[in-house]
Amino acid sequence: MFLYYKYVCFQEQIHVPVYHPTPSQARLATQLTEEEQVRIAQRIGLIQHLPKGVYDPGSDGTEKKIRECVICMMDFVYGDPIRFLPCMHIYHLDCIDDWLMRSFTCPSCMEPVDAALLSSYETN
View (tube, rainbow, N blue to C red):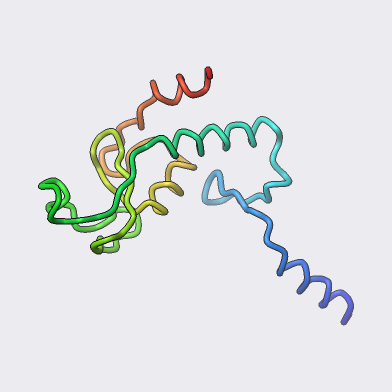
């Protein structure tokens, strides 16, 4: 019993990336098929091409109106890393990157996140 407990505790200390394609599914990266790994890599590549910045409520009139990230519901704070979507909505960088790993639609207006960019990225 002690050996089993020690083994389980050791297993929990090892960090293996976990992917959540949907909220009800969580799988270790090692359990993904090659096709799923390619799709994830393509999504990550597309996400990295979306513009990012730092929240500064005084630098742009549109940012003055946007005070909170609709994903986490937390107020933006000066200096927060943000990402812009093609529809011009902004979100905390980590919040929207996690969202886009599950869905390529804007959480505010439900517009697709530049499907043309995705298809051109997949063909390269």
